[in-house]
Image (cartoon, rainbow, N blue to C red; front, side, top):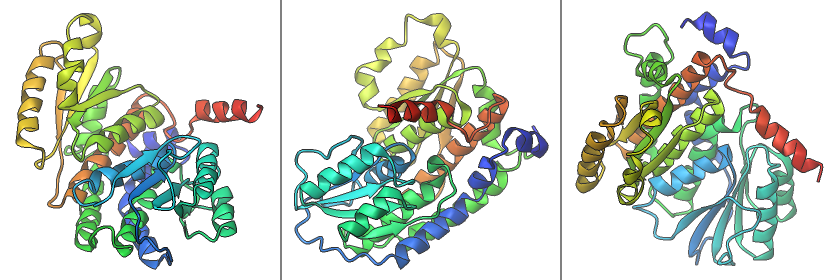
Amino acid sequence: MTLEDIKRADPSGMYVWVRDFHRQVEDGVKIGKAAKVKLNVHGVRNIVLTGLGGSAIGGDLLRSYLADELAVPFIINRHYYAPDFVDKNTLVVVSSYSGNTEETIAAHQDAVKRKAKVLCISTGGETEKMAKKYKQPWIQIPPGYSPRAALGYSFFPLLVVLSKLGFVKSKDKDMKETISLLQRKGMVLSDPDSPENAALHLAQQLKGKLPIIYSANEHLDAVNIRWRGQIAENAKQLGFGHVLPEMNHNELVGWKVLADLMRQMHVIFLKDKGTHKRVAMRENITKDIVSQYTSSVTEVWSEGISLLARMFSLIHVGDWVSFYLAILNNQDPTPVKVIDFLKGELAKV
C-alpha cells in the first residue's frame, strides 16, 4: 500500500483527519478552556449525555474515563426522550455534531420540559437554535468533519468544562501527555511504508475476517465500542465484541459449535496495565480457550502513563486499523450511504 493508493481510495480525506488527530485534540482543549459556561450545578445529582453515533461516543468515553472520579452517576442516552429520572437536579449534555440529529433534538425538548440544567455542544443547527432560545450554554465546535472523525471535539471540550464546573479535577497534565503521545504514534501509524506500522499489519490480517474485539469492562468498554463502530463505518465491515468479566459468564460458552465460521474470526484483545488483576487473569485464560478455535488472535496494548493517554492510544490505533482496512477493502472510508438512505426514508414519514 502506498500513499498514492490511499489518495485514490480516500477522496474525502479521512487520512488527513486521522493523521492530524493530535491537533484536533489540542484544539478541542482550547475550545473547552475558552468556553464561557454559566451554569449553576449546585445540587446536580446525575449527568445525562444525550446523543447518537459519533456524537455519543465522546460521552461514552467520558463516562468510562471518569467512572472512578465522578461523585454522581453519568449515563448516555440514545433515545428520543430523556430518562424518567431527569429533573431539575440533572445536568443534561446535548451532543449533536450537526445539531440536527432528530433523536437528540427530541430528547433536548424533553429535557427542557423536565426543567433540567442543559449544556449543548454542536457545530450549529437546531441544537444551537434551541440553546439560544432557552438561554442554555452552547459550545461551538468546528464543522466540516464526519462526526466519527471529530472525537477530539466531542470529548475534550466537555472534559475541560466538567473540570471547570467542579465535577472533576483539572486534567491539564494528562491532556498534554495524550497530545504528545498521539503525535508520536501518528508519525508511525500514518506511514504505510513503516515496518513498525502495527495498525496496517493488523488491518492486513483482518481483511476477509470477522473481527471480534474483547477488552476489560473497566475504562475500555467504550474504547471497545469505538473500535467496532470505526470498523463498521470506515471499513464497511462487520465487527463484534464483548467485555470481561461479563463474557466469561455467557458468550465464552458459544465458542464451540460453528467451527468453520470461528476459523474466519480474528480475535483482538485490547489490553491495559490498569486492568484489575483478576480480570487480566481471565483475559489470559480466555485467550487460551478461543485460540483452540481460531488461529488469529492479537493483543493490542495501550501506551502511556495516564489513563487518558492509555485510552486514546488504543483509540488511535483502532482508527488507523479501520482506515487501512477500508483501503484494503477498496472502500472510501468517509461516506455512510446506507445511513443517509435511512435518514431519507425517515424524512418521508
